Length: 465
Image 1 (tube, rainbow, N blue to C red):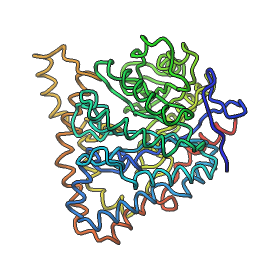
Image 2 (image 1 turned 60 degrees about the vertical axis):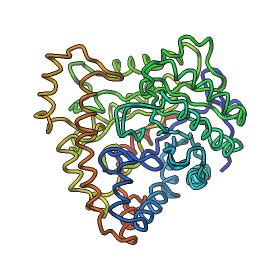
Image 3 (image 1 turned 135 degrees about the vertical axis):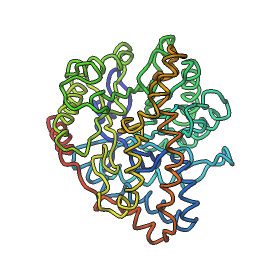
């Protein structure tokens, strides 16, 4: 299927004939940028790959990841998304697929080939791709999803890292400049620049570099503070040309331990009106400047208690209706995982899920994952720390989210994740190459479970137009 080029026209994205295009899609989290809650490991991707290589050996390690990178998204996955009526996929990727830290600026063809394979098969099914650099050298934010083993985003402090990102995007632009099935480029996922001063200057530099090679593709630029804050653009006289400024719009009841919606979450009552106010606040810059709205990430997580699903689906339906009413495009997070959020997920009795089950149990009990985790099992550690801060540092509020999330990152998501990563790796000790391939096949579409309630919400919404 041939897809038209798309471009920005006022508040809309339009095709070559000027018809409005609303992007409705999903994010492909966990494929070329792995995340702990998506595939079950503790901590960050670089570290878990190091541990797995140590335990499995090179041959089995390569067998696992070669199979995983093929089976996690293939022809059947694209066909399934098309059957739901979706027309776009945001493809997150880690810079490590394209460049090694030990050999900066030496780009690896295999990364481009992997990305090209999925862009091509999506295009065959009438689905646009948005290319999303999700993990940058030096780390652009303070959390695991930028493959950050610490809580510090060094990308903003070192021109070396910034030079490498410009170099990579120049190569990506050269590779995909003639591909209309690519809707555009999302150069930095969820930037978190504490000063708010480096980001706008870097966006300007990146825009010039990409446009010198590829003047046609749309740029999708995330806001600061994890794509929720656009105040860094207030000094700009006008938006960049052919550019969409993209917000992320996770609704609090859907990503916490809430038990109902509408209802009270963390002392605040949430209903459709409150959810819409949050959306309007996060998209104020786009509406003020008359540029298109694209919600690059949103969506609830799901619990093992299926009785909770109906109100989470109601929250999702409310968000989708709000986006339609305001003419917003969107990409739901995420397509495939081990059961927390995906449209489809690896079956509980699959070889991979059964192998990692002991580590996942510990991870859940200790709340080691930030996304979908709970600190209930580690209050005996955190409460005394909170007491010290209450007594001695009561006004301490570090960027980006303040004291309590900061302590959670340091204690749960780093300190406790590090030893559990070693234990996770031990589960793979002695795995043969053939066994490694079989474990990776747990993510093949025909071996996954569909979250049918979620599919129904999406299919019905898209059928309504």
